[in-house]
Every structure is written in C-alpha cells, then in structure tokens.
Image (cartoon, rainbow, N blue to C red; front, top):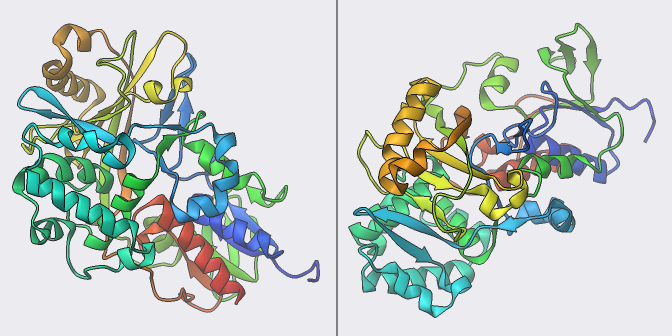
Length: 426
C-alpha cells in the first residue's frame, strides 16, 4: 500500500477504538488514533494513590470467557496477572448473611447454599435447567433469544419465584446492568449468565486499566496520540480539526467515543440523560477486611429507595496488589442517580450508617475514605441485545462504534470496534 495513502482516523481510545485499531493494524492498514485523555482506556480507568491503593473508576471486572476479550487478550491473560472472585455472592437477608455458590465451580454441595430464603427447590431445578441450556447454546443465539422480552419478564415466565428474583437476580444482575428493575433484554441476561457460570470474573493485578494497556501494547509507535481532543469534523473532506488547531485528513473516520461526544461531532442532538445508567463507587482503606475473606461479592437485596449500598467488594482480597501491605481496600457501589447528588461527606455518612448494620459500627467507623467516583455515564441503556445489522457508515467514509450501538458490555465495545473496522476495509 502506498505510504501516501491517508490513514484511517479513529477518534476515541476506549475499548471500541482500540479494537478497531487492532483490527486495522492486523490487516496492515495505516491509522491514527486520537484520544483526548492522557491515557487509553475510556471507562477502563485506574488511579494509583500515593500510598499504593489501586482504584478502578467504577466496580469493574473482566469476564475471561468474553469472546472478544479472548480474541484480543487471550495470550495476554498470564501477563495481566488475573485474580478471580469466587463464583457466587453473599447476600444480606434479614440481618444475616446467606451465600449463593455456583455448583459448576463449587460442586453439587453448593446447591444447598441456595436455601435461607433465597430460592425454592423448584427454583434450584430451574436454575440447573437454565444453566444446561446456556452452556449448550451459542452466544449469538443467546443474545437474540426471546426478542422483545425483558430480563424481569423472562424470569417470571420461566417460572422463577419472587424470592429468587428479588433476592438474587435483582441485586446481582441489577448490579451488572446498573438497573435493578431488570429492564434489559432477556437475551443479554442469558449471554451474561453463561459467562458468569462458566468463566472467571477477574481483576488484573495492576487494575482494570491494564486491560486497555494490553490492547494498545501491540499498536505501532506513533499511531496513538494522547491528549489530542478533537474540536470539529469536516465530514465532506474527512478532515479532523484538533483543539490545538491542527487539521488531519484521513481516508475514513471511525468515531469510537461515547454517545454524547459522537452526537456533538456529528452535529446531532445529544442523547437524553435517560440513555445512561449511573453508578457511584466509594473506596475505603481499612486495617482488616470487614468480613472473612471468602472472595465473594456482598449484595444488598433491599429495594427501598433509601438504600444506597447495593454491593460491597474487597478487591485486595481478590488481588493483593490493590492495597499496600497490611492494608485492605473496600469498594462500596451505589447504582442510580441518588448518590450522584450527594457530597462526598453526605455520601460517606449515609454509607457508613447502612454498613454499620452489616459489619458493626466500630468496624465501619475505623475505615478511611480514599475516593469517590461518580459515573453518570457508566453504561448505556440496554436496548434489545443481539448482533446488529452489518455495520454501515453514517455517511460516506464516516463510521460509529461503541457498546451503545450494540449492547452494554466490554465484549460489545470490542466487537463493535472490530466489526466496524472489518466493514470499512471490506
């Protein structure tokens, strides 16, 4: 290919943009990736504190069997130093802890852990039948299963009791979707259910941002330009004007930003606030873990509007690198808009008040607040899942990718970037 052939311009260095770049690089096509931030990753962001804590921006995990993650990162899994959560959860029910464990990982004895008011025996049989179904069904078929049916309606029509819906599915998958009403598509639930029961939910040793850095590592030197915000697009000439005033012309443009930035660049109306799911994560340091280190996510099934604590994790129990020696890192997640409006002090007071009932007032009072991350655009709304129609340019030479045009997940972001790059080259 002639050296003078204009590069393909990728705007945005999140998972979708990096997957597009990797696809183009594998095909020998020249490209330039323009990223406004000082690092790649987008929502895959980790901050290291001066005293050595790793704080992911939002509670994030890597499901190691995601097809697109395996495609791009499978050979890098060992280098990421992945450490896995135990497959299941601890649920706070009637002031007591009940464990829900995955029989595929923990053995048949784990079925007994679905007692304690979490599930009926018919529920357990239905779970076993559902697990068998998803394991023997392709990911593509799962994503398009039961079109037009929400996850909540699927649970009811499948015959699950209100106990297991409200005490397990809502707190667990409500946290995955950031939607405790379980309105995403049934197909998306089935796809994710398969990933959770058959794979590991893992943390990289150096934080979730290490996933983005591993994606970017093979890209040619100079092909990724950081701290390079885009101010304007000339869609007719495929020219990008940077905030610095520099102009760059490409043979095509891939917009791999979040939906609101893409709308601005395309001179379209911005998506409404309701197009996003929000989450807030507060991090605490402690001398010791708040509970025995069982490597399970702690869930709150309470459905009252006043309940801000939705889940609690101890990342340093999973990967010791998340905290300095002799210290514990605790993350507390609150989904939805309620926590966004609170100051750090007000949120801290409310969380400690709720968690004192979980772990004891003296234990919680001893925690030191490290940081609060408010993510109003944590996930796009989950439209009905499934493979989109073959990607097409929004206008000649201009393409858009991201999980918001597919379904909300890291797998979808990676798939969207790859599919757009492949379609563009075709």
